[in-house]
Structure formats: C-alpha cells, structure tokens
Amino acid sequence: FVSLERKIAVIDYGGANISSLTFALTRLNAKFTVTNRSKEISSATHIILPGVGAAKDAMEKLSQSSLIKTIKNLTQPTLGICLGMQLLFDYSMEENVECLGIIGGECRSFDRKKNLPVPHMGWNNVSINKKVPLTNNFNEGSYFYFVHSFYTPLINETVATTKYVVPFSSIVQKENFMGTQFHPEKSGKEGSKLLGSFINL
Image (cartoon, rainbow, N blue to C red; front, side, top):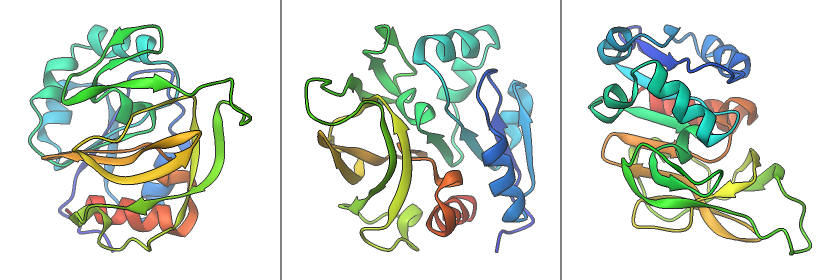
C-alpha cells in the first residue's frame, strides 16, 4: 500500500531504460512523474535516480540539464538505483569521472582476472548489516537482480552487503540519500517490497 500523498519524481537524464521502473511503480499504485525539470524534482516528496549506462555520460547529461546542484540539495528521501547509486559517490573509476560527491568514496571495477564473469549479472543474495527504515520489510538473505561491472566497497554508509569477487555495498544510506546496487524493479516480490518501503518513508 502506498499513500496517495506521495509524489515521486523519477529523474530522466536520457538513455536510461526506465520502463521496468515505471511498471513497478504503477503496480504499487504510486503517483509518479518522469522528469528532468528541477522544479518538479524539488517539489516531489520522493526522488528516484535510476541507472542504466555509463557514469561519465550520466554525469554529463545531469550537468546539461542543470540537475547536479538540484540533486545535491535534496532533503526528501532519494533513492539511487544501480548506476544511480554509484553516482551518489565522489568518483567512479569508470572513465575516471567525478560524481555527485554526496557519499564519500569511489566506485571500483571488479577484477576481471578472477574466475567470475564481469559484469556481475543475475540474482544474488543481500545481507543486512545495519537496520534502517528502508529495510524494515526485508527478509535476510533475500535475492535481488544485479547487472554491474563496477562496485562500491564496504564503508560506514553500507546498510547491506553482497559478495561477488569481493564483498561490496549492495545498499547504502547517508541521511536522506539511499542507494541499491541491485535493481529492485526487476527483483520480483522482494524488490516491490523494498520500493514500497522507500515510497512510504
């Protein structure tokens, strides 16, 4: 159940395939708009920064839309998904790009010399190491859907961890900014529960 008072802004910075996300929000009966307009984003109750693509291209598009300052100044619950989570950090080794700098740290590339394929693609389990409202309905060890070649190491803001080549942050939170390295919108029932928890914050 999602409160009708919630107004979600899904940030549109071009190139991101967000149909799975909009379908998931529709299934939750959530009221949302897909927008790159600063005023609409700032006036929403909840913001989602989706992520498909490369960090450098994403940061360039956010800059062209004059959204970097808007995002950094948000005080309402804000969720970055996959690349959207990585953009919350200081820096990405993917084309060596400066990101939003909301959470301290960098995104690193998985070691391709290991006997595991990169990108990390498919279902993997997530272990909670810090209780936060976002994970209130979370079943420990639940499986979620991942697609990524870069990861963020374990830091103070790590809420949940997953292991692939190395342990990495699969959920992070700093104040009102949250991120999931996995795609909740592609993760079935557990993903829907997590999105619902976010929208009801």
